[in-house]
Image (cartoon, rainbow, N blue to C red):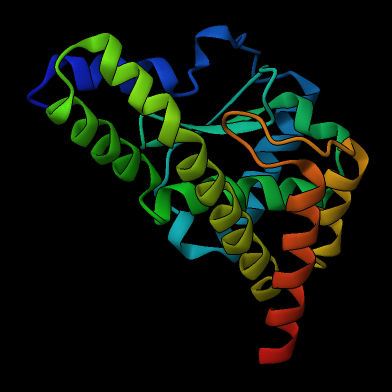
Length: 194
């Protein structure tokens, strides 16, 4: 926690949260699929062995909660195993690349310079998209490299975004078409180094 309650408040408001998710029983078929994926992932990616992961029914496929826990949705079961691996690796990338801490630092810097909460919010909104987009691209690249190390085809990850087909950035994520292109470029870089 920060020494400044406004920093905590603003970071909490912009982070994804499991509050909108629904718990599912251990017998839930989709939960069992995702939990089996987590076990395989931990075998292939030793750095994930001690990372807390939770499976719930959420709108988002996955997210990191409070910079500590990866939350995965049962809805991931609609994807194929390589695509689910990508989502887990992407979320692990956010953790391993320190994105939560970077957002906290960004918000704290703004709060320190702003005279009041409304000014801090306005400044935060101005710079947040750029940082968030860069984090998404970096987590995607981490996931592509992780897929390559596990012997999986990262083209599967690009197809996730091809199927979305969005050509517009939003406040937190780059356009799906941009992400698919960046994934393919990273995949080529990985292939060239092998």
